[in-house]
Image (cartoon, rainbow, N blue to C red; front, side, top):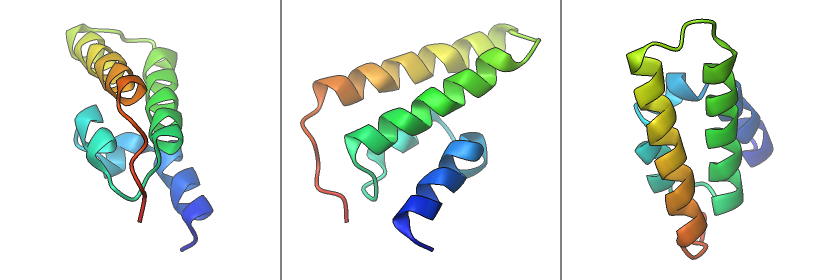
Length: 79
């Protein structure tokens, strides 16, 4: 699978491939830009659901924290 195809697959359903947003941040295959794209897609998917209960609100907070971490972290080499 090409890197572009992998990224599209991960963005389509991030919760299927990552246990939590911190795992996206730690994934060494991805650049910071790609990590941010996945986190944004995850947040948009979550916000699109009608039920924003406590679990969803907690996950949204984790997504925001992960995004902030990426913004503060220098770019890592993907490989």
